[in-house]
Image (cartoon, rainbow, N blue to C red; front, side):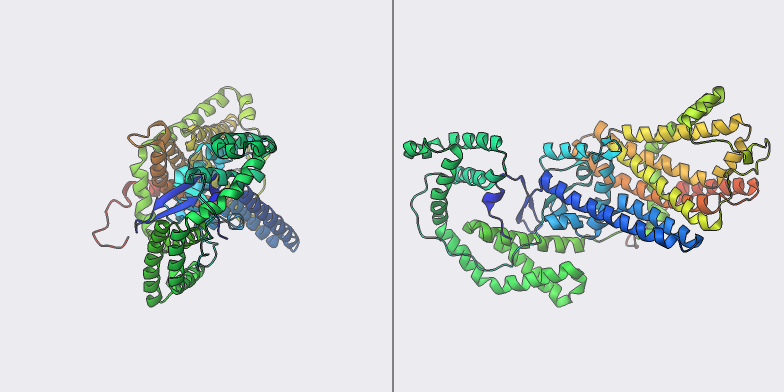
Length: 594
């Protein structure tokens, strides 16, 4: 649907220049439309989760194995709904979730480029902070809403880190075609172009304003246009300010349309001459959107490139000719659609997963060793302090670790092979345990990274909370003389798991440093740069925690001699030291695949 400029005069806009030196104007999405899109997405998430949970509940009644499978699927489904829904839909769907698609919104980078998958991951990891504060267990989203209202691009914190913005979707416009002929002359306008845009903007938004706000805005506009109303002062005195402005708009609209007549005629002529080329361009854009540019033949790709350059040139001509808002808006929307399609295809260059795991991730850990070391000191330091405190005051252990008790199965002092768990974990239950541990730990590291945006305070809180809880747990077992029972359980998976938490904490501190020490860059620029840099660490910790969860769910519960578990933990420690110390030291030679 074509949107005249008067209808968006009161919306915030942003202009970006394409590599072809053509300006694309975007209308920023307002808070109300973004909340509406979020409400639709949340309804989809909740509804789908409830239906899946109901189906899995009945499937679990078919036997123990199906119950285990159902519980495992449900755990992963809840995790993906919380952390993956927005990330995957936006990253793979061109910046649109189902809710954004329904409202007509799209996420793009601030330079106008299509949303990259890395950008989607960054903006949605920070969503945990944008949803703060949590009131009665329900995220309020106040932090993100306030940020959008005060930011000139209506960006929430996640958008600042990812370098993105949410705009009115440029994809759902009418087909390019001819323009209406200019109307007949209706007299000389009383208002200048700027004054008429002010009047048209008020008339377009007047019905959406609350009565009191409408009266105040109308009075302000009347004051600015008093000279035009003074020509009919007697009649104007009998009407309200709103009625006077509506009447003035009815008189001025045809006059301003007529003044653009000659220029609009040139634009209409251009539209008729370019109709066939535009139709071919629209067809290629629509096909490319559905299946990607790779689905087009080589000849069609070349034709698309030529037609895209032609449409961007037509956009510049339409502005020069003073085309009507309908034609100008339509040409711009289709030029933007082609821009998104073209540069989304060009930007899909990524390092292979194998090379990233073998070289890039360990390099990143070595590069950012200082914030990781700080996180390690805080995590283990708080754990040591809590351990000492619980050893001195056993009652404190119940406060710091209220859910941890030493059971009868492991109270035999000196027996390091005693069972840590109250009951043996059956083979059918191991997938449930592994998935629960895996998703919980990954969520903790995501939160530790996002918490860095609170000047590092959120990361510090998570590190201290987990460090104190771990130290207190060891203290409780040590007071009962069975510390080695807990150590035997933790040793198998703990080296990988705790190392990952420290790395995630370092990433969070690195993100927080953009606010505290941005250097010569602005804080917004520092956030974008360091968000991209430290994202590699978070991706690596996620893989580490998947491995740790599998070990903790399938290997740690086995009733093996404690020596085997200590040996396994020692082996993982040696492998991690070698991996982070030496992997990726040799840079790929020039021209080698990356």
